[in-house]
Amino acid sequence: MSAAEHLSVTASGPGIEFDQVSLTLGRTLILDHVSFSIRPASVHALVGPNGGGKSSLIKTLLGQMPHQGRLGLNWPGEPGLIGYVPQALEFDRGLPMTVDDFMAAMCQRRPAFMGLSPKVAPAIGEALERVGMQDKRKRRMGALSGGERQRVLLAQGLIPAPQLLVLDEPMSALDEAGARVFERLLAHWRASGVTVLWIEHDLAAVKRLADRVTGLNRQVLFDGPPEQTLSPERLLSLFSTHPATRGSTL
Image 1: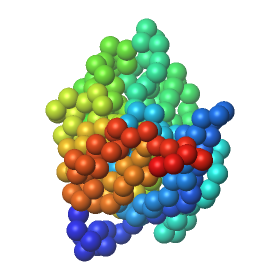
Image 2: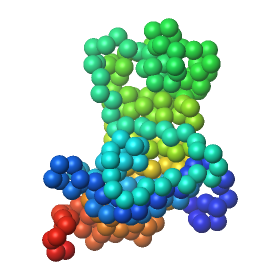
Image 3: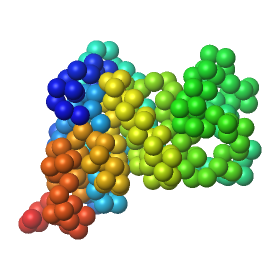
Image 4: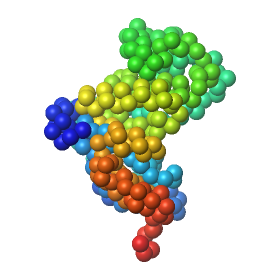
């Protein structure tokens, strides 16, 4: 998206600022003075090696982990809704829980055993239709493929419609058809002014779909437009470097 096109989108999502954010668990330094910003209504990708702090940074944003430094959400008006789509769903696959049961548990206050609430049933049906899972609503979650479960997770991320959406490797289990569904959703969120923070390992997808990308390996190693930052040299540094800890020499 060009700068002019970006400015033409009415932002409903916030800008985000990470300012010298650090996180230590026990004696392990997880995040080391991380600073970068995310524009409102943009798709911002976060890339880096496993163990580099990406998921921990998301947890600090969601208020699930203590941290040092400043983390700011700059809403254009009243604070809106934050949606989160995890990388995977951990559950007992032997449970007799259907797709509808799962959506009811995640998207309504009414107990799932009472069925879908008439207030949210249309939205759930529309969300499942958009991810191509409408015809599998009565299937057990445990009988779905990994890609199908990921589509259901994407569907629950649509209800209620968020203004800030955090995605933790949403493409990890998707097949080619599922990846096309995700790309359509990403285009919809961008056009709707939603701010998207997206952890992703598929660098080709990031280069094609993200407005901006940050390379994180405990520290920020690069930050900028993907066509400029995802160079072979920078990626080699990102995935092969062990960041120095405090007191050591870079």
